[in-house]
Image 1: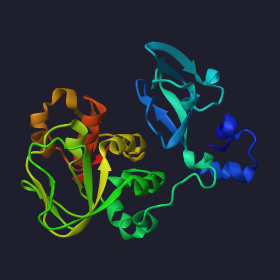
Image 2: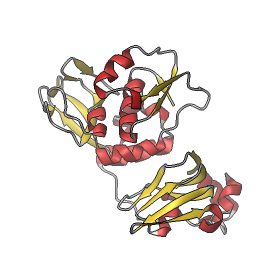
Image 3: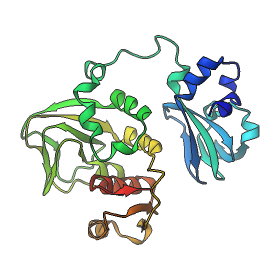
Image 4: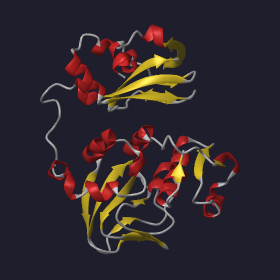
Length: 284
């Protein structure tokens, strides 16, 4: 990683200690074709640099190609594009923007974020967050909104299309026959796929929940890192499975297998992957 960083414009004149510090906030991404890297209007948490391969720069209805040599070590965000999508398989270097921040740039943390030990450990014990890198956890503390709930409080109403999800830190909740406890995500599938909630969702005990917007959830998907040691042993092609049949199909899967979720759009894949991870599956 150190040698790769030295090829990038912001790091070429860094001394060794600064470069090592930057490397601790960087990781190499290996991405397939047609993966969206940047969209206009996003506030990315990382700068992305093209290391190998070619991307498509989309701006004002026109497309142009950009390869690693032409990128010249500059961050992709400097191109002012409406959208940047991988054209070929690429290697890109993702660096937390905190590396470039000046002292005083960050707003003071909320009381809850200043004391993450009060709720983050319970959240990280959940079956989904374990597949995300530590750099994501720090961001989760910042974007998650802590909310105290009372027993009987309504989180979602039946038929509502949610724009957020809740992660249980303390307490319990129900949605129809589903029960949620610490570490569980409530409304993730409906939020991602924009489908109505099947029943009222109620807190069944006083507790502490963390709210995430749909936009934050979609951005979080880019950080998903499945275990490298586990190779998929079962392919789940969502293009061949109707949404109404998903629950029955998932029930028939072998928990000992590593599931490769493919097909459909990213939001539906993520919703299915989330359900599988909450059931204890490893997902690629």
